Image (tube, rainbow, N blue to C red; front, side):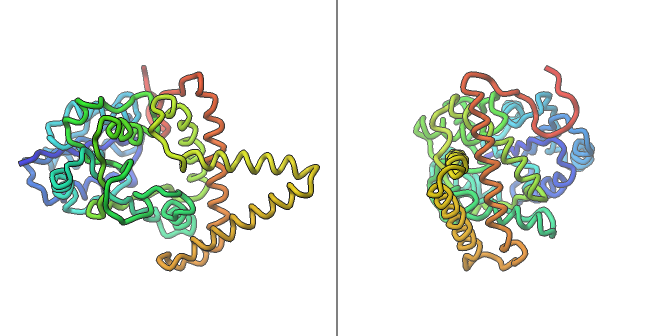
Amino acid sequence: MTTVTFVVPVRNEEQHIHACLQSLIAQDYPVDALEILVMDGRSSDRTRKIVEEISRRFPYLRCLDNPAGIVPTAMNLGIRAARGDVIIRADGHTVYPRDYAANCVKYLKQTGADNVGGPCVTVPANESAGARLVAAILSNPFGVGNSRFRTSREEGFVDTVPFGAFRRKIFDRVGMYNEKLVRNQDTELNARIRKEGGRIYLTPALATHYYPVKNLPALLKNAFRTSQWHIFTLRENRESLKLRHLAPAAFFVLLVLLCLASLVSSTAHAVLLSIFCAYLLTGYYFSLHPQTKRDWDVILVQPFATFCFHLAYGAGTLLGLRYLFGQPCIGPMRPGMPIHP
């Protein structure tokens, strides 16, 4: 029997961690071949207490310390402590189907891939208009480009998957998670897997439900902070990011140049207006896709909200140019207990 270890990096996840762990405990995989390691990054809320309460009833679930408070360190500590032949990178914001572990093992064997994963079905954090708007942006091709794990249900080999299930031996071939990367650590690791001849497989059988932030300001803040890591990630591994990751920055630069030129040129003003109108029309086209739920309060503002999302993402990427010759601060992006070196 193939042994499986879920490694779950968390920091201040009290709102979601119970549902996440309940879904992992409910796996239909044999308990004697299953292990759950929750790597707590010094949470300051009730996350650790919730995990420890659950672990008393389920001895194969353990809560371990992640003193650095960041995901790549949590994963490396978890992988070293794990007894599983398959390592599944889980997320505290995600709920997993009962057959997830079994299907991970199945598709690793069936495809010969080194990492398998599934589509990330974005679910509103609650029923508010803001939460539904965030989910609509993150699940729409106009918002996130050709990110297949967010927008597609097609099965096949891909460049990356979220929260992958890895053959343990792949870490001996390509190395562990890059602990310099507070963000983009999964895409960078998958780039190394591909470079060494490994393969990554996406299948709808491994679809999961992900709960993002609750409102647009929180999404913009997250996009701005995350995208600042893109330039440094490219310094670490040129093959780790795709064109979609840099497109918002190019769009931001184009708009700034046209805004400046429009001060002295009516042609530039006309081009700027045309681009903005074309952007909104394209946004409404994708918002009204036949498979899109008809939430009209969301649809009416979605193109404008997506515009703000792309600007925040692009601005963050450009601000990250300061890391062409420097090192970003390696610290947790979520609040919590102080992190000591």
